[in-house]
Amino acid sequence: MAATPLTAAHLPNFDACATDYDALTPIQSQAAVQLARQIAVHASTNQTVLPKQTLPNCWLDVGCGTGKLSAAVLAQCGKQPMASSLAKLYGVDNASAMLAQWQARCKAWLQANQLPTAVCQPSCADMAVLPFADGVMTLTFSSFALHWADPQVLAELVRVTATGGQVHVAVPVAGSLSALQTRFAELPIFAFLPVTKWQTALDQQVQLRGGRLLYAKTLRFCQPFDNLAALLKNLKGMGGAVQTGQHVPVATLRRYLADTRPVKLDYNVWLAGAAV
Image (cartoon, rainbow, N blue to C red; front, side, top):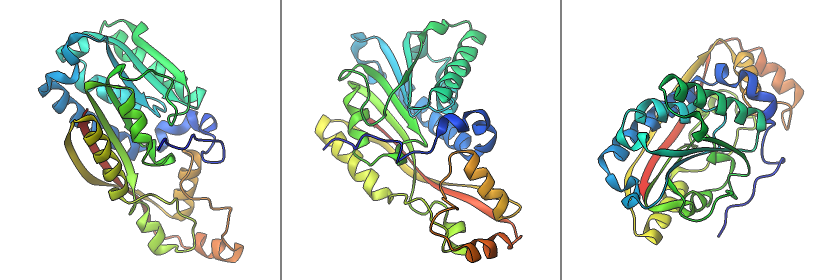
C-alpha cells in the first residue's frame, strides 16, 4: 500500500517558518547529528552502500528542511572515500523556502571543502510520492519529517534506493511531548505513532528486498523552557506540534498559561537504518 500523499491539511506552512527554524529547533539538530553518526559508521563499514560501482553515487535527504541532516551527514561522511565520488545530493521538501536554505547550507560546506557545489539538487515535491525512478539512490536518509506521513512512506524511501544501498531515518514517536501532556492534559498534542508501527513497516520493506536491519533504537531529547507560553511560542515558530487555538476552552488555556513554572519539550526519536 502506498503512503498517503501529503496535503496542506496535513502540514503547517513551513515556508513561513524557514527563516527562524534553525534557531528554534535544537532538538532537531541533535537528532540529525545522532543519525549522521550512525550513517557514517554503517556506510563506511559496508562497501555495498555504493552497489558494485555500477550506479552514480547519489544521496537523498527526504523532508530535508533547512539542511540540518544533510549538513551533518556531509560533516560526518565528507572525508570518507564514498563521499569523494558523490555525484548528486538531492534534497526533497514541499517548502521552497526551506529548500533554498538547504541548498545554501550544503553548497557552503562543499565549497569550504573544495568539492563541486553542482552536486546539490533541490526538489520541491511530496515525500510520499518521490520524483525519482526505482533504485537510483545509493544512500537515502530522513530526520524529523516522516511523522507527517504514515509508516508506509518508508516503502517510498526503499523504492528509490538501489539494491545494496542504505536507508536511515530518525522519526519522533509516541511518548513525545509527554511532559506537556502530563501537565496540560487538554492541549491537543500531535498524534505521534508508536515505534512498533514504524519498526513493522521497515521490517516489511527489508524482508521484501532481502536486505537486513543495521540498527534500531529510540533516544530521548529534551529542551527546557521558562514556562508554557515560551514553549508554545517556540512550537508555533517551528511549525508546531500543538494546536493551541483549537479544541481548548478559553478558560482552560488561560489557566494553563497562568502556570509560570518551567516546562520541557521532550521527544522520543526512533533511529533506524537498513541495507536494502
